[in-house]
Image 1 (spheres, rainbow, N blue to C red):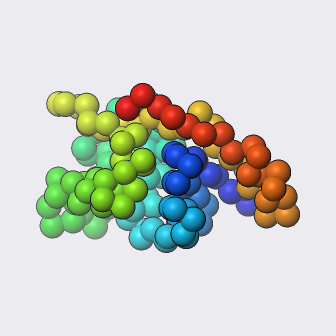
Image 2 (image 1 turned 135 degrees about the vertical axis):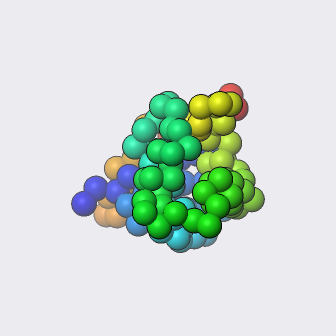
Length: 127
């Protein structure tokens, strides 16, 4: 399986394939909901996702007690813990949310760490 990595800053890399973020050199695992939330956005870059699309994809039939609060809690979590990721998710008033991703995903090969590090592009968006 190919790893999908997204570099948001020199301190923040999302590894979608193993539910983790490497933040300040530390591996941090995401919960299933956090992962599903990010995966939904990453699979739909630059597309406005409506509130209902987010709820349906992340919670499916297990709707949280308050769906708006559930989305808000996830956004707050990313703002508090990984602001580089949260800063890429934009609210589109009256419509929903969208993400602007780094220029490219990275294919990770554990046998060539040095080569991989040299190929990691730095994304510095105007957000």
